[in-house]
Length: 448
Image 1: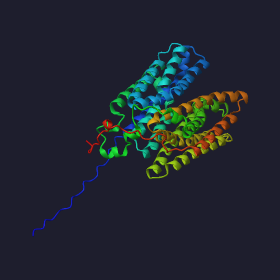
Image 2: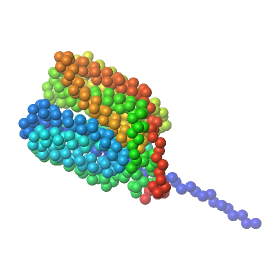
Image 3: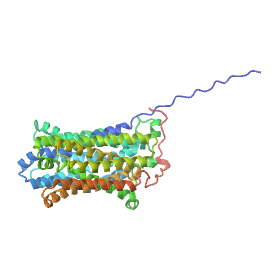
């Protein structure tokens, strides 16, 4: 009797996942920088604009303010369009839109044309971060989303911090009108490259292999396009309202750094404009580091299987309490440099709560994350626009007592803590949307 030996079949080595999804973060980071360059450049060009157009301080202030109003007003429509038609088409269109009106700012010939250009510019930029958040939710696993938000907000904060220096350099070679044209061109270039690469469904990208697709959320979880927004579900959610409230409290205090801070350094600290301009960049620099630390620390523990609910609450509550404490302490410090370092720490702590906020929009909002993040950012910008107005009112009522102003900001940060204590930062509001058989895309077995 002949006995045949059977060789054991050797298992094929597992295919390593590709890293195509990280390009979404690269596009988000570069867009965040472009966004803040286009947004902040007008502050440095303001003296030249006022001189050429014959504008008063009040009229120039109106040109500043109208951006925040339209930006807040179009946040929800911008996010809704991403949920409805996908981030690819919407981001390409809104970036080209606001880039055009960045260029158009340089064409202004009077107050009305300048205000119109800035209003339409704000309406376009409103679609940026909700749709970037939509792209993150579509392409990134849950454990990578907080880190991605941290990197993006680091870029945004530092973009705002270094833009004044960039604008001053550009204005040495170009007129203010030509400078707006150059800055507008950056967005158009970004939109072309993004539209060519990005897909609303990662399964449509040929560079994503099966192992990476296993990490990425399924189409039924994100429902990239053509889904009706469940407005009633969102409006009845306690989590949604608490999420919007905490972001409003954070934004109310944060706008001080980009509006009244130079005046505070001059009046309350006795600094000259040059020295004050250098110190005024500290909060944005520290805030960017805070976003980065929050994204990497929180993301690390979530990827290691930690309790995401507890991690996000702890990070955000620590941020709100730290921001409140440092802001209050800065009042009693006599050295301007030390006071600004402590105020920078307040910005650092405040930004610890920013990546978790946007991560909640992705995880809780699900297929409506664009709309939810737009609503949260709208409430934040509405509160942010109230901050400068309230500051002016308090200064008049208290005889320019800056201590009272800073204590109100500390109180707003402190209130954000209570919102985080009671909101659920992880449980989705919406069930996964079933995918019809004709919409199922076969999973590729190789990385080709």
